[in-house]
Length: 484
Image (cartoon, rainbow, N blue to C red):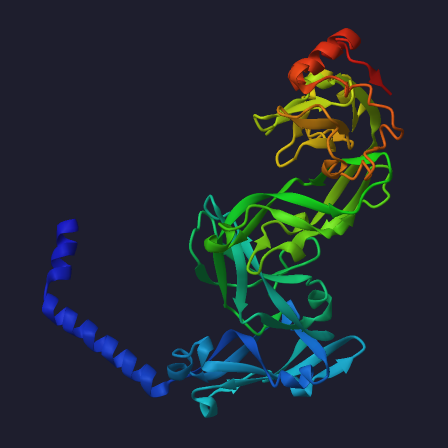
């Protein structure tokens, strides 16, 4: 049975195919000759025109989502309609025809065909576009450079510039009023040379969150940020002060908080800077009798071309520690005084058995000081034979203050006949008048430490003589008396 069907279908196959082709051709000819009209629907987006009309009203408009697109039907011959697409039509809303109503704002929308317009019929050619209106705001913002990361070790971020540095923003007042700053970021991580980059400025609100710019119009899309990379150096802050504290008080220390700061600039300038110095005229300790603090801006004491790496370090706190000093008097035998620069043919006799040395300092420091640590020195260089009064020299730690300590002594020649030296060769400090009297011995009595009736040839050496007298009359140097 199946074989008979196949045989029937394949019989005269060529004639059958020719007949099918003829039928199709005839059908297409009939269709093309008739070209019946058809209807087709299209959906396209609405395009707004003359937007400046709304801007002139100081308003910002926004198209409502449900009216952003329009749907319409097109009637025309099949041959025309079937070859059309949405791009062959245009929906235009002329914003100059805005109608403000209590229940909403609308703009008429006109739909036009860009091709075969005379052969097409568009249903509901005029539609309405719904818009919302807000107050328009336009404001200019300075674009701030926003460095990201840290330069390489030993380097710091110098100047930053943005070109152009002003951005105009326009849009709804509710959005523009949220903008607090505009920043342009540049990455300076591990950089040791100057860099430049083109970046998109970002708008931020007061909380540092990025502001959505969808509804905003910006005058700039791209800006250029340039970063200058300089050297840096950490140096101490030193304080100089003027004046003297109240009597009996002394400046113990003058420090700053922070004690050091980091400065930046060209390396050739930084190499010549060892410290940031606050000059004397800024801090005065005159009459001070207690510790005090004072704020100082050190920016003004930086050389030209040098700035602080951290601007918060600009104001430092100067701390002046002023404390009352205690007075102690140490009594030492004259044999413990070292005599310097006495000529070989001269000898020196002290006119006193002991020397009173006045020292000021803190109680704890004075308690640690012994007479053995004083080691006074008498420099007699350039002095001629005669009676003299001169200040002793002591070298102590700077935490002590030594009062003026003078000693009376006589220089004589080994060839002297034992007579009293001439008054004209007396004290270089003016302690002795022209009659040979001095303040220590105002009368005509001989000094208790000087045996003027002993012949020079029988007198021992000056230092040996002083040692002999004082061993009998004075205590050991380590137990010398101390006087408050």
